[in-house]
Every structure is written in structure tokens, then in C-alpha cells.
Length: 408
Image (cartoon, rainbow, N blue to C red):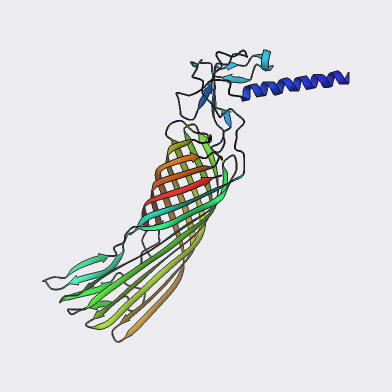
């Protein structure tokens, strides 16, 4: 009796295993759905002796794998036959019968998934130009006419390259933990030589008792100003990739540390006597960062089949709220010589918004590694970062970037 039961159990297992193999092979014609890219349907309306299945629509279960999962079906679908499956409530396809598609070499139904805990990395060259609410290098007063005419002279910043790097781990379901780093540094200068009846002032009054300097007064007097900006961010975050038919999305958040420092220096002469003014401020803070990214493949959605490539439209947004300390120092030197200094420390909050829009090309190597190249427009806004000569105002970094990434 036990032997008969054991044999029966083995026969049942073989039948189940055979059925599973039958449905795991590419025995069905596969054609892309005419409703959305990234969704495939399988039809066995001919050349197959099994139960009738009108069609089954499949979508990728994860952006990082070749696994297929049935998508939601409309009401009124056709159910599997109890003769073959023993469960009349199991749903195998929509009620509408699709025309049978061409037979194609389909890699998605084979046992070729890429389940692993892998590495994800990226390196970008970012080309941005800093902008400020006010970034006055010095002011000029023309007293040669009947009235005084005041002109503002700003720092002439240009585009500067900056590195951006990310490194982390990612699992088969698109859950990722990463460290991200960005750094930017730039400087600028501006100056003039005075004709008769010209007077120069530094960009903005400092917090010293003198409150800035006055240069000029006679022909040949000069003023020369310099500015410098340095900033960086470090993120540690978690993110999850999700598919919504045509769109691949990533959502995440974590911790951010950021620092921004700016320096202002002005040297000149007042009726031939040397004058100078130096000011600087720095913010160091910690806070939270949240972000989202959406990628729309142009054409059929590729599920990491080896040796393929695809092109996608991509957009992302990131927001960070930071709290920390702001330090300020200044020194003014006027003829005499008379010097005055000032130093302050205060609590401060600062927010950073980042937006990216561009195109991305993906290349899947024969090893299964995903290599991608992205070209995009980048915008970053540091609200409350100030300028070289002032703690108040906002800083923007606008430009573009080229990124090379890898997922393995």
C-alpha cells in the first residue's frame, strides 16, 4: 500500500514537473501588445494541443530581471479548463481573442533570469554655471556730471566642470543602497582703474565697524575684486525601482550632509593709499533627502536580454532640507591705517532642489551587465546659500551633465 502511494506520488510529481517545463519554454508565439510598450502577450490559438488559452499579457516583474509576471486583466476573462488544471477559478487570459502573432525567438520565457545581489555605480562630468540673486563685485560712482551715476559691476562667472559619483548595491527586485558625492568649486574676478571723479565701493557693506571700503577719488586709483565658491554634498540613501507598464520609476530617500563656503576679497587705492576688504561665510548642515526618477523607453521595453540596447527619456527630481551652523568673518582696512574685524556664528536652515531632464542609452553585455550613458540638462538651487559678499540670497547651478553608469 505504501509502495503504491509512493509510486502515485512520483507520477503526480512528474506530471506537474512536465507541465511546468511545457509552459516555461518558448512554445507560444509572443507579440508586443498594441496598447503599451513593455507589455507582451502570449497566444496558443494554434499549433498546440493543450487547453485553449486566448491570450495572456505579461509585464516585467522587475526592471533588473527577465522574469515575467501577468498584469491585471479586465473583467469577463476566460478561465482555465478543470480538465487540465483542476481549478476553474484560475485566470489565464483576457476574454478578447487577439490575432496570433509571428513566431519569434523569445528569451523572456526561458530560464535566464539574473537574480543576484549586484553592484551599481556611476560617474558624471557636470558642467554648470553659478548664478546669484545679487553678486556685485564693486560699485562705481560717476561724479563727473551734474548728478552722481551709480553702476553695479558683477563677477563674470563661466561654466565649470564638477564631478558626481555614486556607488552601491542592488538586489534582483530593484532595492538599492547607495552613497552619492558631488563637489563644485569656482572663482572669478573683476576690477577697474579710475579716471577723474570716480569712486569705488566694495560689493556690499561688511559687518565690521567700518562696513566696507571706499576706493578711488583721483585718476589712477584702482580696485580689484576676487570671489571663490566651494560646495559639496554627500548622500546615503535607499531606493526602490518600480514598473508601471510603460514607465520605469525609482523612489528613495535618506541622509544628506552638505557644505558651502564663499569668500570675497577687494584691494585698491583711495587717493593713492592702500585699502582692502575681506569677507567670508560658510554653512555646514545635515538633513534629509528625498528623490524620484522616471524613465520612459522609446520603443519596446527591453528586459535585460543579453546583447540588446535601448533608448529612453529620463527625468528626475531631488529635494533636501538641511539644518546647521553658519559662520561669518570679515576684515576691513582703510587709510590710516585703520582696521576692523567681525565674526559671527548662527543657526541656519538651507534647502537644495535638483532637477534633471535628458536621454539615456542602455547596453546589455553578454555577461548580463547593464551599461548606460546619459546626457541631461541639470539644475540645482541652493536656497539661502548667499553670494561671495553676502550671506543672504540664493545660489543656482545650471548646465548639463554626461554620466556613465553600470549595474552588475
